[in-house]
Amino acid sequence: MIKVVGIRFRKAGKIYHFAPGSLTLSPGDKVVVETSRGIEFGEVVTGPEELQDNRSGQPLKEVLRKATEEDIEREARNKKKEIEALDVCLQKIRKHNLEMKLIDCEYTFDNSKILFYFTAEGRIDFRDLVKDLASIFHTRIELRQVGVRDETKILGGIGSCGRPLCCHQYLTDFVPVSIKMAKEQNLSLNPIKISGVCGRLMCCLKYEEDVYEELNRKLPNPGDTVSTPDGMHGDVASVNILKQLVRVVVDLPGDEKEIREYPASEIKFKSRRRGRGKDKKPDRELEALEELEMKETREMKEAKESKEPKAHA
Image (cartoon, rainbow, N blue to C red):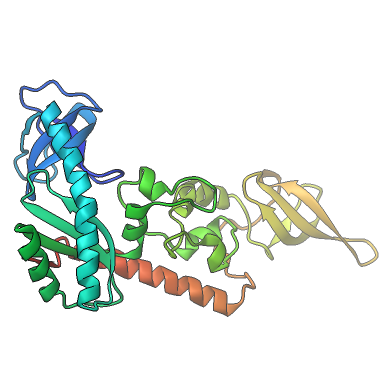
């Protein structure tokens, strides 16, 4: 068993495990630790807890110390310096006429490195920019290109629900989101309605996906022929996923038809996975959604493959 605490360095950032050593730590404690980037200031968010093994396979580093008043003041000074560094970097970007959007700046706790985060349409040659920044700050400079989802996570904002963005508040990692999730939940396939502030499919489509998949297994597809509990046959007009109700167009004597509603548990149909392949949405909307999904998949793949900084000096 390994005793660990989970430490976070940025709001809604990834949680990293460290060994508490002889320190007594609890969630909310400010700590100073050594990472691959240097000495960092973080906050304990989980633990202490015992794990069966170390999943990373690497020896866990110990927390150096609980943050002192001096450490907290130093971190506050670093935050002010980050604002100044952002202004300087923006000026240099304009000077070199680079097509890039500066998002954020981050100082390591020991000031051994400054990281600048930016977005751009393609690859940017910013070697001269890095040299300028290094000559001004006299420390190591790293520029990291991030995707639109990461940009939104860093900057924050208000979602269509009227609440602060989940990715900025508490989501540690992004998960793949697909058009299939919107179809399973019977949502409009209009890209405007199911896209987030970042322009990609909303992360919240993933939240209830498992529940909707399970509920949909108990329902027929619109258009399927079913048998009703009153001994009639008809075609499914629509379904209410959450209430588990099915509206069926049944045939009445005299060539008349009537729409009746039944509990899903009382009708008989051939069980199968819901594909919703019979929707009549315009092709242009589906094409736009597929393009969003492809962009999102590509960006997540690039982010996973590119853990190292894009450039440094």
